[in-house]
Length: 83
Image (cartoon, rainbow, N blue to C red; front, side):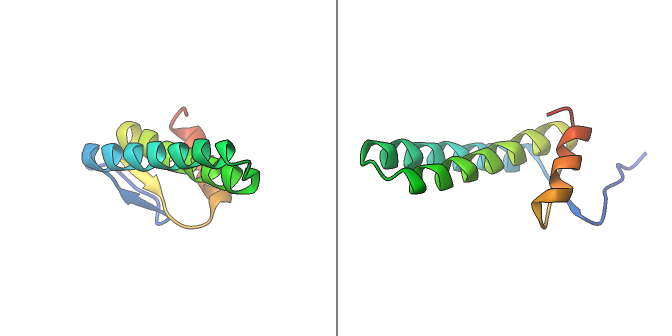
């Protein structure tokens, strides 16, 4: 039986999950660097992007799909995935 995906999601693989996890780490490192320079706005922005990338990694791994588009619908998609 083929998996069903919403028109607002795209199919994702384990390789996608690994790539998104790498992006999450990179954004988190940038957030830490920004904090060290007292650049708090940049730190928050990078932390937000790290969270989004980490969420995409979890969804890619657990759901074999990830949200595309605006974030409000993505929250519901993540809840369905248990994250």
